[in-house]
Image (cartoon, rainbow, N blue to C red; front, side):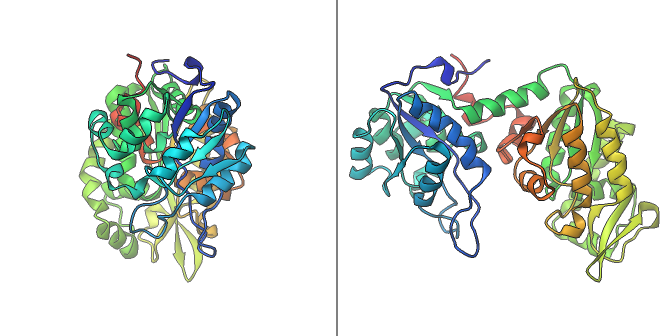
Length: 407
């Protein structure tokens, strides 16, 4: 590969700083973090470094200053200990005397989690590796370490201090989570495969970026674009379909209608490769009501694709081969409402059964997978990247990826 991994370095007896992403959802009842896939995934890298007798120093964030989920990392250490199978020490300090003393006193195989990196204002400043290397975080901790491991692909789109700064002073390699993310994306984008895009969710601008990126690379590689969610509704509007007052009011409120001209051009270029909903489901008096597109407008808010569309999309997905790849961004509808989870469930069940390489975007898709009774193991790869995945696919460059490139 074009980047270095843990296979390329010796860690025994070395102090290793590892940037992981432990940012976790908060339980509204307890106010504590919930266990999640990110913690389980990063535990693999941490355990490997510990078993190889490295002295492991973990850096991570939780929330942002001023937000309710901006919390210390004590609970994260406890949950990580369970997944790693070894005690993860925690100190409520980041660059002070206690942190420095704790790092210096680490023995081979021990693991230490320092405090939330975002307690430092410099952490979230966008800057070059060289500039960040002169900041408090890097200048304090780098002299205590021998190696930097970036394992947090999900923050690799941010040129933050803990993401890029250490690379200016320390040898830098990818952790196992980062490695898996980059290998999965390379499999989809770089290999000679037909690509299907399944685009949904409530962030149409991200879907458009992905479609544009794949089209600009080689439009002939695209087999189909299956549109659902808000994107599917916008594509219907490009043909003059009246969705109904409540749905169109929401779209205009969010300024999603400003994408219609751009989507019209995409539709023209894709031709029959673009698939739009043929029926939708809307809410009326708390119930799910399905209606064919020809019979719109709907008298309530559209929350899902209809069963006919879901069946059609599932058939297209199941007809793919092992040589094909599918990129999935977002659920088909408002999956958090059980009545409007049907489209997402039908599509994800088909994705789980198909022969193609399936790359599932993070965020809502990861949550939706669990709610429809599936797990990440049912797909080729479920990304933890979220925004980073979209940025990488659309721009093919991330600050956190650039520092990993072999020199």
